[in-house]
Length: 479
Image (cartoon, rainbow, N blue to C red):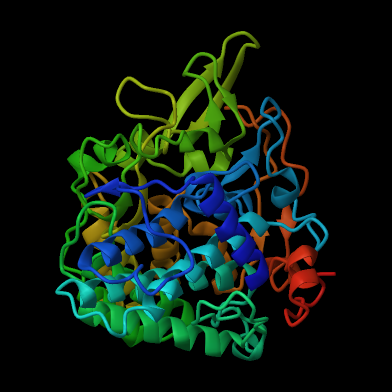
């Protein structure tokens, strides 16, 4: 695996493709094998950390890819979307859970994550003798990004601790902490992987700046990620404690639409600006191409899920849209997230990775797990009062648990989380069986059910990765 990372890095140096921005990732990042002069000044380390961040913008990571990445795979793999017959057929194997090791599902994301990890380790390995005033912050950012990349890998390719009783002892990720392209690391257990993620994030949270320039993580973003990691671990009180350290407020109802059109960053904790000429990626084409009257969707919102957005829920306007392909006379319940800025349909919007709403939904779920229904409802209602004109409330018992889960599904629809939530809850994926047109007619997705506990909840490690690194054990059933 590290040999692959080495080759990718060398190739990147040859073709010079790495570009970021100044305060918003617009400087050319440093990304290469270190020399004795490469890491000497404060600016060298600033350039180096921008190089780490630029790894997130890979199409197969958070940048939008036809083969699947963080922007789309958690929904494509789950029950929020239906395969659209008028699209280009992207990610169909992923959507149908028909992957095997030879297919290398999400292999691009796997490589992009370890490339990001390599860059973080390169910076960290050269930081020992540097005493610039930005050192603590930059080192903290590198640890946070290393943790994020490993967390994304283990979420797809390993079990989640709360998923089953044997999860902690099962295969996790190879947690790489050195910039050595010759090593062939083995996969650690899920428990070992998560513990190292926590260590990196805890150290990062202690040193990272409260505020950093746009395109950079800050203390709120790190604590939100730490809260999510603890939630996945079933460490309920620690998830609450981390979430309580997030100071930012949930976006107001009036600003929810604007968040996804880039007219406001209300409630956004970490985002990567996406502008020409620095990045300028049409990430929204991962869901569809064209405008409201000539839409060609790759995936559409499942009819039952679309109907679950109540009319007074502002997310219905922000996340969904009624669109058509007038040439064919077809109507769709289409995905509006990532569709474009005001007046645009090009899918060029900022890449938003963490939002303040998550800290409250994490707390709601953790409080419920601890049996504190009052605190769980209070945390849940912080989000609901900023989404509905007449917010629901007052649930108890199982109804409260279901309300928390449904609110999480609504809030993070088409945004990195659904597959992992179903996976960590240990429940089956059950699609609604309806078709790809707005009224539920048309053609349904080919496969409708992935039973709870099925081995395909853990994606197989690509055979090409195992050919390079034979120490990477395959997931059960992944051959």
